Image 1 (cartoon, rainbow, N blue to C red):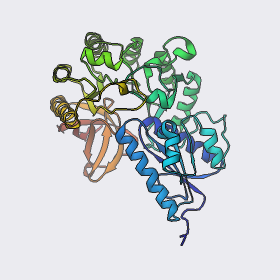
Image 2 (cartoon, rainbow, N blue to C red):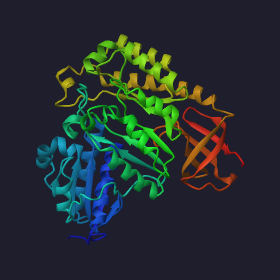
Image 3 (cartoon, rainbow, N blue to C red):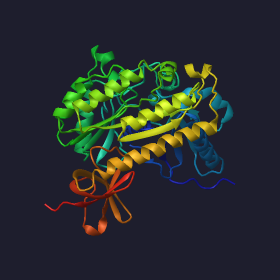
Image 4 (cartoon, helix red, strand yellow):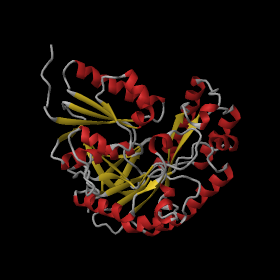
Length: 435
């Protein structure tokens, strides 16, 4: 017997995957709200839109499981309709339609107008920068480009997101002004590749020009750079970072590996020597910069010698922030033609070794912060602590600063000067400096 549906005519948007997907869900929700639709994010609703990730095996599995979960709810009469969008749907639509036919409709990454139509809404072109943000009020992601032109052998993003397309500077300024008006103080710039920004629109790399425009937006106090590419990095960005207080001394630059043979097979267009030189130039230009990177271990053909080269390089470079992933063998990528010859247990062991090494480096760097005072943005209150971040830390992936809530009230979304009193490998503890 069919049970009564909950939250009639309410659209629940469920987001999986990266910050780019978060942004896309926010744009979808902004469009729905502008069409006077009742829309929520990951709450109860009788119509469900699942924004999927299709990047690597774990993410695909999570996306498929989430689709199956909501299809089951549909069969039980708990929801009326299930729509699927995002990267998994873009990449595997025919397979999904065949394997999970009880989804009402599948949409790719570029089919927002069609998805809106299926939800009884019209796509409104005039809504530049109109989003329903799902992040804490004080920060928001700003997607400055879509797609990627890089030929990396392991990556399926160009298959799912298409070629690189920059958003014009004036549109990004309008969007930033609207975010600032809603209380956003920190912009986190995202794209598949920040360093390519502007080449398609302006025929040259214009990330530095964009930054100079964004720092003029009133109310924005921090601007953070995520997902830079090491090849062709526009060095004038470092000068802007050094001279503009609003640009955080922070960069996320996924380097993936350092062994020359692996870098060549990955089609990264660089070498160990060039990468090390680039990072040295970063440090010289902005000595206080926190560098975050991500690495892949277990890539096809990665020998023990390749891994030891990578491990020694991580020791030498002493990155402030580092994440490590095991290689995922993805269909229709260039690396899929190679033999996925590193056993899963070896991949895991190597990833764990890198993260253990990084944990020690992070602990040592954090110990040096004890006794120093930092400007900290408070994100939330959690249990007995207020949780904040310095300019050297991005949300969800980096260090957090914990301040005992018993010491006094701290308003979320405000900045405070915090003296660091203690530190672990990935957390700092501090006290408010009384004014």
